[in-house]
Amino acid sequence: MRVDMHVHSCLSDGLSLPSKIAKSALGKVDGLAFTDHISSRDQLKLLEKRFRVYGSIKIDGLTIIPGFELSYDFGHVLAVFSDFNLSFPSRVFHDIWEFREFVKGCGGVVIAAHIFRSSGVGRRVFDLKEVFDALEVYPFNYDFDVYSLQIPLIAGSDSHTPYTVGFAYTYIPHSNCSADDIIQSIVKGRVLPVIRKPYILRKLIDVPHILSFLMPSKPCML
Image (cartoon, rainbow, N blue to C red; front, side, top):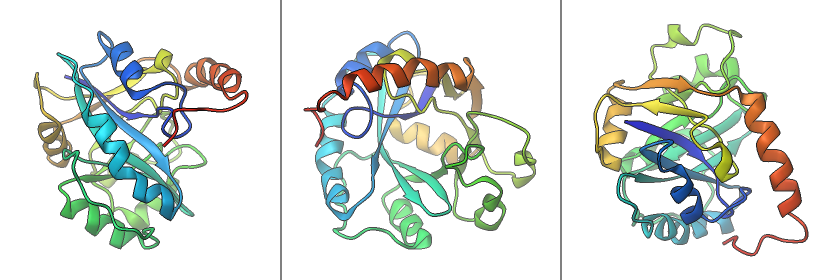
């Protein structure tokens, strides 16, 4: 099963509605995780609405996973879940350990997003390795030995348009997995990151579409 673990929609800084992205994903992947950005207390409160939007998508042959991306001073972090009906606190998780405790308490996993990018955790992962259930390695490079950490490795496209979904994905050696099955496969390390297209190509495709769409506004944002 092919699962793109990092996708953005117009509910944050992506281009399209979640439903449109999901339809475009058919044939490219078998599952995808919506991980729209949050950056403030107000946006944290919106997560429940966003999760309901994700949960309303019903497409045969495609598993939808709810999640979000949060920015810390040390790098970006993903949280993905199997439950679309979670209750979120009204405060921002300033402490990463508090954040992890909340995510794990909800049956989710904490992932270091695009660790090799400047906005990723990078080498700081060696000091924070107990925080993460998995590391996202797209784009990949050899800045440090990520394998020595012995943490499951996953991949997601970080797509911001329907055109680049599936440029990178996580392979799971089972078919027709539920969101919970996917979460458990990550926890158990039964996953393999797959890179189909270069990251620079993803950027070259996504950025022009986003810039053209941002004039003058994005009406679908929650």
